[in-house]
Image (cartoon, rainbow, N blue to C red):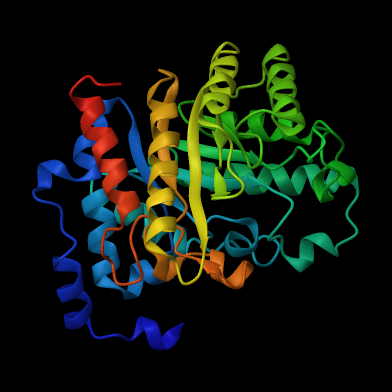
Length: 348
């Protein structure tokens, strides 16, 4: 990874020039507002701080950013009571300098927790105090600067039941509702979301997420939206028609929806046929979002394949994003841009 990051700026910039859209008015971020959505990406903050071409691409193409790791518990509070906001501050400052909205990610999740927390043998009362302090310290710091938060993530298992996690075992099943209330107390103006994978279309998990959202709404929990992650492959992706139906039933609960983390992994090396199929899948999911007024944003989990998480977790897979490792736009980028352009001209 380090060797690839050290490619000369001149060579990378030269490669990037060939991928530039025809005009600034034809970038994704220029087209998205007229289509009625925001277009977003997850951001690798280490790359943001070291790769100028990557930063320019982000600023040019996207108007919504989500930190990939910079606001997760283990990064923000590596030791009890010691908060480290260096990466989060860098992201928020970059977004503000470039007119981008920030979605904070993630306040309560069962992964990427520090050892001091998971091995601390805390009782329920102590865990509530720790989680409340963590959430309110983070949300208060960025009050008025971070527009939305993924408060909870992946709390539903594959069978549609509440997942047993460190938080549910330590605090009880109400930990999620508590997290939303604590976040709302810290910033009453922030848009608060639940975020999950595998429940985008039809099935037991989708039903479980819906039931959880309905329960939270019945209890008056301050929740405003649901992020449907959309990590997909050519062999494992929901039908666009099912995604629309699911979004509409969530909208009937009074919730906005978001495609929050889309990527489409391909077997490497990616063939031209697979890249075309990937482009069609991106197009179909964006069009599903555009067809539902309450779908307010479409985000990809990374801008370029160079910084994608996929190859590290799925060996032999990759090429999942809109831009290649060299920063050039792929067929998927062009399909997303065409769909936004069509929506802009009223062809939704």
